[in-house]
Image (cartoon, rainbow, N blue to C red; front, top):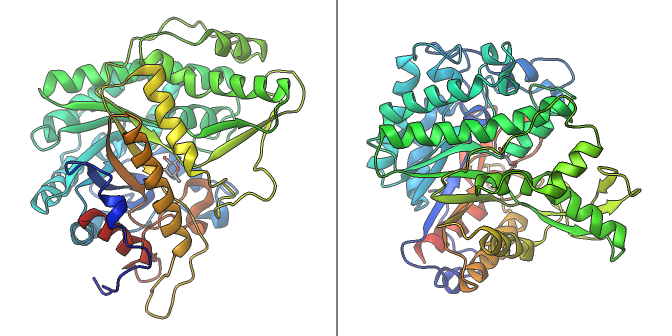
Length: 453
Ligand code: FCB
């Protein structure tokens, strides 16, 4: 590490609020960092197609090279180890392992992840392996993607292949990252791959994600005994814009059609009644038959938390609500409201409503307009402050009885932020995209001290 000076805020007292076996980690995902999209037999994913379609991403950015992690993973693992990480949450690119999505696996793709997990373990960093962080093989999208019920079998086969190849070295598994974002932003709002705008399709996708999760969890357990299986769900803090009856109703509706839409079925309760009636009233269920999806059989829930979403009812019609930051409130570069106590609220709410066996914060972090010095140095006090306040809220959650076992900062590296391309930097390690040089930011040094504290 180039820089060893002590950050302004001593993280010692904060560190002491966590148990000694707490897992401190970093998170990233395949398409956002790997690059090497045509190497060693990898097939195209829907994000290759989408990002190469003019007008879909800021500056036409793509993941073709990204952080070149596919080649530089030993450096990245070394950096994590130097920062003291206990764990690393990454995703496996389905199109590397099965270039056409189904059929025989591509050994060279599996070999990459074998090298990665071996390198991690040799460095004392536990892998948390996530199977799906949105980069569906394009060949499967051509067959209907997640809207096709056959996806349940395709996904279970993929899970089985990865579990057999890596199960001896990986205890912590995740099936999905943010199923709501994948279904709704990709198939109803059209701002993520595959870029569709059709609610009934989005609802089928959501339903098949829940079924695919259950089938994959079964496949993993059958292949590897003693694993822990979770899902990463985005649970931001929803708050009504005012005390008015209509804003409060809109907030409840937003939650029931989005977060609870996944959480209730995952915990074996089927779809929430309020969510069903609102989706139906809005025409989202036209031609969609909903049956109760199988329960998730979860060993833990991963909570991805970033912000407060303030909900304002424009009319009393379902989905006629506006999600906009409150005026004057502190924002990140994403224009996301900074509300650390919302993390405490989200964690205690999950605990109260579902009593999961364990919880982790599977993503938390912030984009800021980093200014790099000549040597790549970034004094990101804003990000450091964001992390400090949110980690303190995570400590509050433990003290309130939430079985929180780990915290993963998003993200290890600056990376490809989906349709926003490289314009938003979430890393605690700066990436100079011209040279691929990595430089830990001040926030990374603070996090290192927290971990060692
Ligand atoms: C989450 C995604 C992750 C990253 C962060 C900023 O929704 O899971 O890939 O884009 O937001």
